Length: 351
Image (cartoon, rainbow, N blue to C red):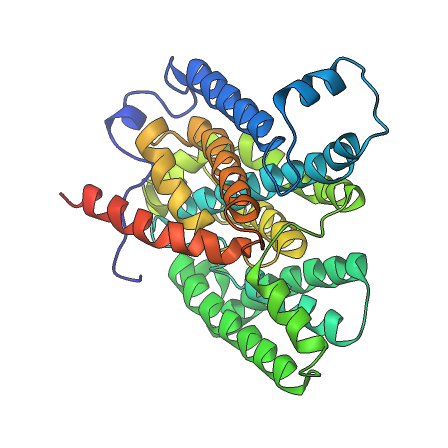
């Protein structure tokens, strides 16, 4: 990881005056991706163990009777689950794109500073203590934020944020992530093997089967708080791709800008993990795929990666609940799909 740096957001497009303005095709591309996401969401309404036809869906949309079983499944289960998949996929993809651009390293993922490991450890601890679903999410979210704060504190203790640079953050994030991973192992070791341990293991596999409408509303606030500043500052992320010295020469406060993106990405990652558990590979492969489709201008790349990530996780969730009679944990499916896709993208980039 440490030896693989690349100018993700740079190139002639940026130096020719594209720092602030995305290419003219950006609006058409975002509209196309948005339309594809809408189509995927409509198809997802029909997918599941309880069969719902397109005619039933149209009847309900036109104001038909909402008291039957099909309507209850749509309104109380599938709409909520589709919304959670869209938000989680968008959050992980956008945070992965931000981290890769900010740290100028295409191999980093949203959990690089320990947010995912911290959130998972917090959730495991909450389950061990017998807390309910919403409390588990709150503890997981707070633990994810605490993990990133610990990464900053450790980085500052070693060399100071100003002198250490992004590589020191990467290294301390790996250490903090390993520390919280050890905490998860300890919790699993002391957990009741017949009751609590299976619940912890199932949660860590990732999934959206227990997400409620309340979870979705709670998820919206921190995700919005993290996403909006990142979208507004997307053009400044292009400047960071030139390197810290050149960015400073262009009048950018590199330290504050990097901190703003880390805070935003941490909010997105911690919230996604607290709701959906460990969903691997999304924040690593979707930024690569998005750069192929949308280019390297982060003003376009960030929203494009959010839309592509939402589509990807929505399709993955459809497969998870529709392939077999028993639902496949979503984190397992994204790993099965993500690993070969990432390998293929790497091979294409190095041809």
